[in-house]
Length: 149
Image (tube, rainbow, N blue to C red):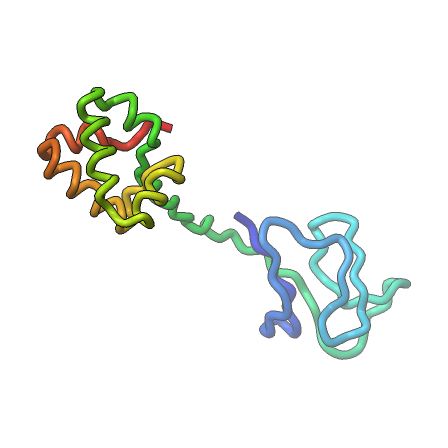
């Protein structure tokens, strides 16, 4: 990736652009407007007639820099409730509904109203513990396995 750096007097960095420079800009702290015909511009030290300007000297440095590494977020596993119902037998569905009926209303509503069960949610941990108790670890893992997107 290229970075374009506007420099004053060879050392003071005034601005930095990634990939491309704007075609028109004002040099910060001055009344000098720059109009670029192409990216090969290297100096803003002349006026409109081509005469050398008095005062600070401005130039553009071009640097090749490594692309920043963007870490991709780890997707959070989720089980769609529809998949849970497809995987469960009629007897397991009856067991789940009976167990839910004994839980506080808040947990009942949360389970009933969501489209999916997000595996990083604290309520999922409670739900899975109940499934393990009712069906054993292996079957609980099968019923609550993450859905394929």
